[in-house]
Amino acid sequence: MKKYLVLILIVVLAMGVLPGAVSAADKIKIGYSCNNFNDTFQTVIEGYARAYAEANGIDYSYSDAGEDVIKQQDQIKAFISEGVDALVVVPVDTSAMDPIIKLAAEAKIPLVFVNRNPFAGLKAEEIPANTYYVGSESIDAGIFQAEYLVKKLGEDAKAGYAILVGMLSNEAAVARTEGNKQVLNKYPGYKLLAEKNGDWQRDQGMSITENWITAFGDELKAILANNDEMALGAIEALEAAKIKDKVIVMGVDLIDDAKVAIKEGRLDASVLQDGKGQGEGGMKIAMQVLAGEKVDPITMIPYVLVTPENIADFE
Image (cartoon, rainbow, N blue to C red):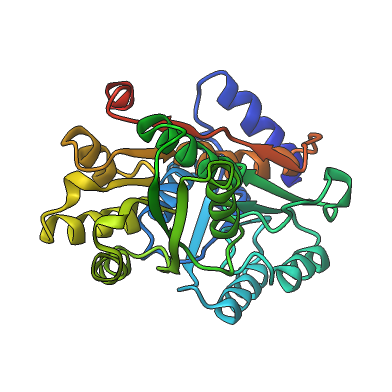
């Protein structure tokens, strides 16, 4: 019954009409599990998922795992017991998703991972049945940052740099950091001074950078952060020390505060993640699977480097 309902919804939505005749009892139910709403970009992704659900008559529930793997598993169990038709999940730990994959498989419902990829390095045919990923190729963000740094300073520059890393349990943090190193290791003059886990948080980015300022002084020429929150924290520390004009800082996500900082000349660049493409895209994939459509297990959404030169295009 629900498969036919989803087909009707998709046809009607393609015509630009909301399915007002659908009763509450017949609504498709989707549970959305977020790793942590204390991460600004995750609130952006979830906001787009919620908006899609509201626009399309979906019975939508969400939960915040607070970066707790066991809590996230318990929340998934609760969603399943409530009778959801599909799950959309931002993993707490991309290396610990097997129990959630098993729960979804036992419940015979589609599972769509968003933003954080538990299948990095796997071929499409190696991904479990009825399981999907919507997000970006994480290593590219690090590559974009490093290439832009070399463009600004030159291939022959002698520059010490540091990396603010997200959570090491997250594939994105590992891959973005690897992308930085993959590029900069080609240039002998670029020296990695330090890399430190800042858990994606602005306050940690600030405190870590304060320590780096003391430790490295004028040797520190650039800070590459795995996300904008940590980058903005680094900027606060550099501005307090009155040396921001001497240090290049870059982030990832292009959150609203990062847009402002780029326009003000405080943040040198951010690598745009498409929050709408991920949040809305995860919901769309779930609906398409429920409708019986054939869906690729991996949907990659490209990153875009945003700098003062093109920030006007992202207003």
